[in-house]
Amino acid sequence: MSRRRMLGALAGVAGAAAVGATGWAPAAAANGNGLLVPTGKRGIILYSVRDRISAVPDTSGVPYGFERVLARLAEIGYREVEFAGYNQHTSILGRQITAAELRKILDDNGLRANGAHASIPSTINPTTLAAFEQQLDIAETLGMSHVGTGSDPTGSNYKADWDTAAERWNTLGELAAARGLKLYTHNHDAAYNFLLDSGPLDALGRPTRSSGVRKLEYFIANTNPEYVWFEMDIYWAHVAQHRFRTYTDPDGVTRTSIFDPLAVVAAQPIRFPLFHAKDGAFNPANSAGYDMVPLGQGDIDYGNFFANMGAKGYHNPMWEQDNAPGGAADPGRSLRYAQVSYQHMSGLRG
Image (cartoon, rainbow, N blue to C red; front, side, top):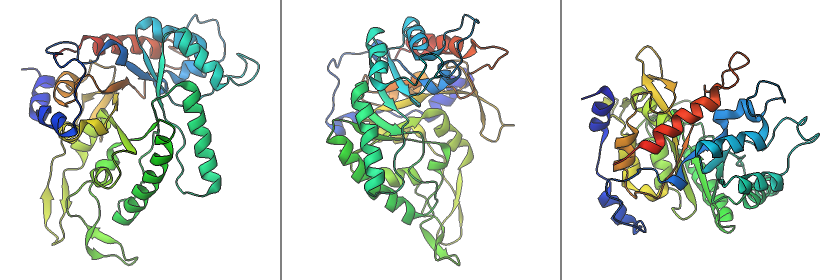
């Protein structure tokens, strides 16, 4: 058994029961051992190729700007894109590109915008709500189903701050739902650290110990499932599995609890319409436990994950690799990695 398959087997859980609990079922239940990521749901977040989106026109022969890069991604086979900003170099058009122009490029290439790491207000007031409505306007113009952020709901470890974040996200999510959009938050490893919710208080009156619940799991339980959705970054969830293994309980006893990313999704797969499919090669010398690599070249078992998370055919995985850009020395690297990663994603079966 390969190291990848062994890691996946240790993490695996069956998701079929969870699908029944949601009331959702795929249109064609007989997916059997077919493709784990249907053709129309193979996506990419444009952050992975941000160097070529923002590039100044050059003579390298590598595509630059939205029109050329999106055409190349469609040629590779991607059908969905997640935006990480809406700007390109102004020298391409002599001005900044508009949302309507972006929509035309998408349509011309058979692409669908399925989300964005937009700006989500950290406070609610008339000014921030107006800015949020502008983000929803852009999402509607681009034809999105989802709109979200690349940040955790709060960077705090304290229950009170996560309560406040849940209340704010319920409000914003209701506004998005009224426009036919699902508001989602994208996780990083810190969101799966343990919530400080019990034990002795510090000098500022804040709890210093944990009941063992993890921050994002608490947030999931305290947000409205009709208004708040999630995009698990599977790489960062595995980093959390590596990093956050112990907590101090209310009595001061150190407890061990190993995080299982797959179990979180399988318990309620419909709350996770989007994923970042980012691979990592296990490296104990790295504090994160993994080095980012193209999809299929690491040790995160995506075949096992997608086969067992439940609601087969429902989810939208977006390939991401933070370190894909090759800089001036290798300007074509991010698009090469995009092709390698697409080939792996399209070959997953189960």
